[in-house]
Image (cartoon, rainbow, N blue to C red; front, top):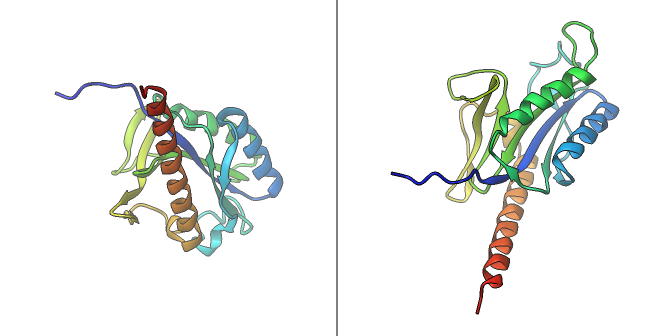
Length: 188
């Protein structure tokens, strides 16, 4: 029988889709207010370079950008962050039916995986409570991110992959430093 332990902590990861720089900044202000400072941000890129799926709902000018936050937070009830980001989206998006200006996909990054949360169920998603599902979006094994059949192509774009490798390595270094600092406190 396994021993039940407290929930681990992980660095929040957020992918923001936005139609204007002002909307991106507004979302980022909300996120920083809740999750703390951004550790690193990826490059903004055109979503239509990868898919036309969102054009009708947003516009052809839709961009997307990845963010990783400095402070690890407990994964206990992490799905509530998706509930909150949905509220932020409702606040920012115009009332026009069928049109959005932002989309916020929160999750977390660990040395082993990138997990994203969604209000949409699918075969590979696990229910976490409050109408929210989680999926392992990217898996890190044998020194690389393993392609999963449900992960969107933009996550495997070389620029985004480089960003994710860099962030994963940074998180590993932070974890090792924290462990060494902790162990040094108890050296006799």
